[in-house]
Image (cartoon, rainbow, N blue to C red; front, side):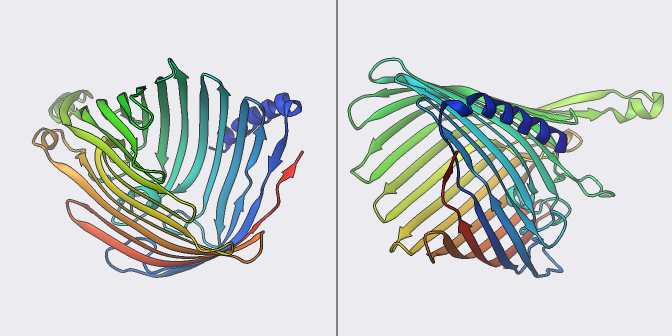
Length: 410
């Protein structure tokens, strides 16, 4: 991970050196300190223990703005007074970059990221009844948008994801052990503006999920139609709906051949996940109040050996009371259903493993000055997974004090 990070930063610095003379660079650093309290930061079902942490926050967004080219480079992270990644309040380190090219007919965007954080943030404490581990992620994405006519637009999207977990030593594998995986997806979107307010779309996508041990695999295809309409000056409705299909395969050791002959041979078992996929978004963009509600179903990569059918509901809102005070609320509910990694027979009989996850947050931000911000957040995290059914919940309070430095151009 460290070697890849050095290579990544070196390549980016070389690009920066070649383009620095073409336009302005600017940086807007943010430094801060955070204090938090969690009633059950490990998300254990039993033997719960509270945790208190003090952490340093660092965010160093670097931007380059040219006439038709923009580049961003953002390292940010959190360093706590405790070691490890078994807590909701663990350390994290991220490095995100993005480059965008634009012209009168469209745009092209490339994104890449490296991250090390806790698995509890993404899949809950599903490993070993609430044991979080380090989650190492490498990802890249690209999209290309082109205006074919005044009303027709074509967009191509691709993404690549590599996720690896530091499983605890000495922990025996179970049906809900997190599995390292690699995932690729891509597809086109064709949009047509029927009139000034109505836009229809056709979206296609293919994906391939591969566990890095070569045991499990999922291949998916989906086709959807979409509709976008501004309801008035501040409300917008967007809906996509269609059909998705995933073919799952698992290699299982032939124990009889191995027992009698000592030869390693695998049998391959397959199963299918078919059904509807959709996304419905209702959003409000106002001067003081912004709201959004998203309901979706999709096949998503997780750490559970196959693509998961994931249902989610997300609500978000912000309210700006004055120049000094603003508030935010976020709440999300997720249900992920995955075929069980087993001895193959269970897959064919339809056994599935489920994860339910709720994450809610209420925040108040006080802008003490133009540069100093004090933030208070109340959080609630609830998870349930199985079978066998295991659950955990945690409530938390966070106090952040951050210093936003003025933009520096060079």
